[in-house]
Length: 396
Image (tube, one colour):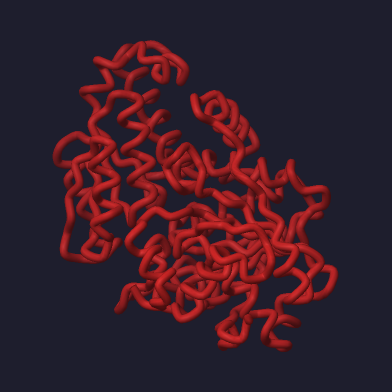
């Protein structure tokens, strides 16, 4: 059943050092503020932590738990926690400046400053899920929203953002080009970028985005009876991975799990950063099926945390992504059915592939006592792509 996952993974070791990035880049206070605010939102509910006991038995692990973010606020992904919260924080800072007084998050959330919010335009580049979260937040808080997408973002994902009131601008280049255009036009027009990646002089919104993600990690930790021994985290710019790694460190301390970063072979900026020992860009030549992970430039803030927390970096071929989606959707290992998107299964695919190789299994320290946490970062965010995968297509 799992034979199709018998593929070679590339691996490079991290160089984790005892440091304070998991507490200083993202503080316990940052996480606490985000958790207090987001859990007060209408429609908040913890997402499921699904036990994949059948899979665990087949790969020779003690347990595998999958945090399923598909139901999150009806938006289909964990990004609902980040972009919307960061938008709220940008509005709070700007309104406090405009009005010359402290404005609370609750006031904005309850609509007390809707007229003022209408004059503050928020923009971002996205592969889909972050933009959808930002558009949803802007619609809730009354702010105009412009979203920049690259050529390979599906029309289904673009339509989902338009349905939430966003103006969607499609460019001919890749994700990194869309980031540059969003920054340029925001500077020219006095708009505010709400990005999930940081750069020199731009840190507050990305920090808020990552703080928002901590809600997901806290839910998982509180649902687990024991700390996981491993967590497999998909890469992208590194925001999700860094947030989860920091939150796990803050929750479990010295018992925090081994952090394994998983990326597409076609977009391995964190893998290359680990090899180089510093944040390093990756030249994307071909788009991966994992649209949400097609990022060539790592977030500098995220890398600060991952440089200290990540033990391993692996890349996976696109060929095992669709099979991982079908494995969950069909309950092939006897586990509960989970409908997951392409980017959600990166960690799952890497875990199975690693366990199919005795050498890689040993390299990652996986054995019969391993308790593995996976972050299922999205549900079905593009029904057309999901349908094609379920029809048996491995490349969409």
